[in-house]
Picture 1 (cartoon, rainbow, N blue to C red):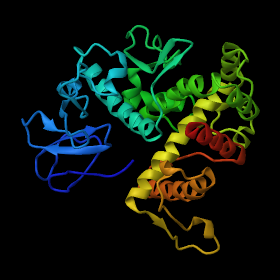
Picture 2 (cartoon, helix red, strand yellow; picture 1 turned 90 degrees about the horizontal axis):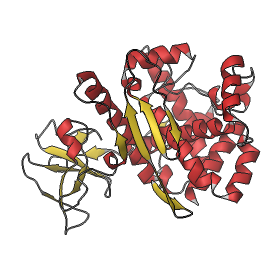
Picture 3 (spheres, rainbow, N blue to C red; picture 1 turned 120 degrees about the horizontal axis):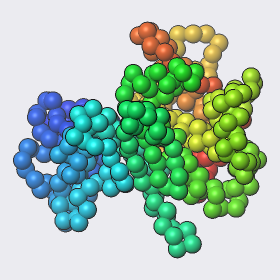
Picture 4 (cartoon, rainbow, N blue to C red; picture 1 turned 180 degrees about the vertical axis):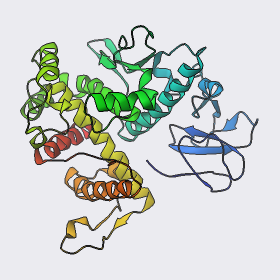
Length: 350
């Protein structure tokens, strides 16, 4: 992600900030301009620096402490681009639901930032039928805690809001022997299923190449799921897959790899904006010396992206271990995985 500053005092601010700690101004994110706008409290509507004929107000979910994005004051839709995709949210009369939902919305906005950088639309039409990205954020019945399953179906992504609870998420992570489990990771994985339908399923050329790399998508998904949870992943899965779950079915291999594609693009853009350079005090390992001097969203090829990404993962994992944390990126990018990432990079840019 790019870096942001308060446009009033130049203080460094985060993407999620709603106010500047230095000057006290309110902050709002303008999706179309990819920038944070600073303005005095109670000064609505504020000028739109991208479209001078418009003025801006907060998305209506700002009232619920769930959004800091700005929308046109003249728009009939009072929700921003991200919040407009919500089909269902949990009952906010329960304080724990409201807190979980706020965390979910924060992660979803980071997803939408990446989709916008990749110029990926969220609305499509196939055979005169609309196919739109939408979300259900649901709470499980306490008596049936596993009733709500996170998943995707025909453009609708369902997320169990318990995933916003760090203790629950860590419990599931350990139970399933996962090495990584985050809210943002969930969003990136599930939206991968949506873009498989958009970019692969409806494109015969892409579908042929997909099957060479990822396998047969026509295999029975339910049977593959049962087999995976009964037998687990093959012992040598790291040779060809980004995760053990990716071995379950071609669709899941795509979604897992898609999520990692978004991981690496976001990490590299952040590194570029920080001007990171790696020149480690270690001999005979020249491939660790890199300068993140390019924006990965500006057309860089995958070989260049991977060349810079791998040293970054080693450095960030080393920093995490220095703080007593587990690896931030506990994965290995084998050559077959890199080939799959390259395919995703290609179809996204077509």
